[in-house]
Image 1 (cartoon, one colour):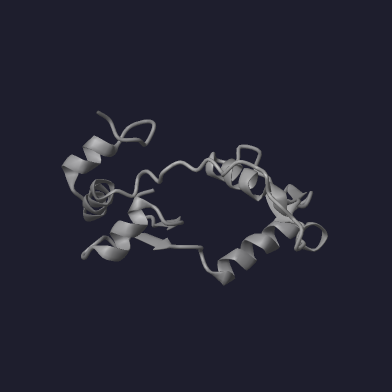
Image 2: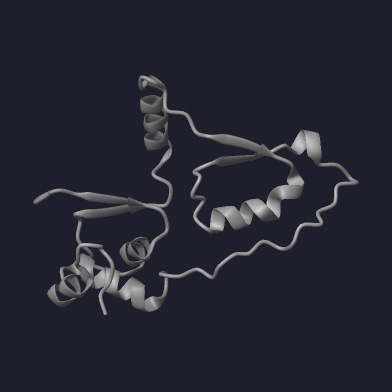
Length: 140
């Protein structure tokens, strides 16, 4: 909205541009995790909701760790929160025969992406036109 503010959470190209390059707009703020107070507020809202909003928790043995990394890296479409059963499954004899996790290289945090985000934060009209669109993704 006009005159509004945008707060982004997570280490994104916008976060990197905002924290490492000078003179960006004050209409955009960034945070790695959102902060303890904000996290507590979200948890309170979820707890007071009717019905309560609860995460889908799946308890996994430590031998599933490689698979968990692969699932999380692929986007975790199920939205499950994985909890490792350390007490019940980790021992001196525990072995992991699972294949190495399949983790894709990070994309989007390249210098080019960070520079474009900085230019957008500065109000560069050519970057706003290039990067705007119905999908919110870069064209071309």
